[in-house]
Amino acid sequence: ADPRDPKTVYMGDWYFFYVSHDAGETWAIKSKGLERTVVNAIRFDPNQQGRVYICVQDVGFFRSDDGGTTFDFNHWDGWSHTNRDLAVDGSTSPSTIYMAVGMYQPGKNGRVVISHDGGETWTRSFDGEQGYPGECVYDLELSPNNPPVVWAAAKDCGIWRSTDRCATWQPMN
Image (cartoon, rainbow, N blue to C red; front, top):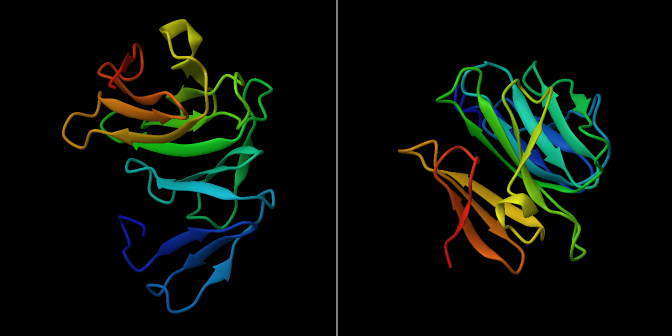
């Protein structure tokens, strides 16, 4: 549900993105600008009303600035990895977006990428340079009480933690 409007609910499935403006009583497909693929995560920007971010499998990252009516595609660095999860840190302005990426195959350089400008540009983090073995990252979580803390769950590699907004990472198990 949209944190600014609890009657607005967003859902994604294997091929569509849905919006309800009446607390889930009725639904509309909103797919203008979207590729037809699996929606893996939907997040809201707490600093920008109407801004919705989604990551989709095998395609990339999309942003809507009109509450999910239309979307713009952002393909970064020529990657076509599966985007698994998003986390949005609203304690920064503009909001910082973290995205978990990676393929199912071993050694395909899963990682976390970061945007400080609404998804226009991305930088890499959490890859082989920090000692991370490069498997698929499936889940990201931000500490609600301490936003510089980010956790990542990675295939066959356990839980990793960053205490400095993804500049460095430590294995937790």
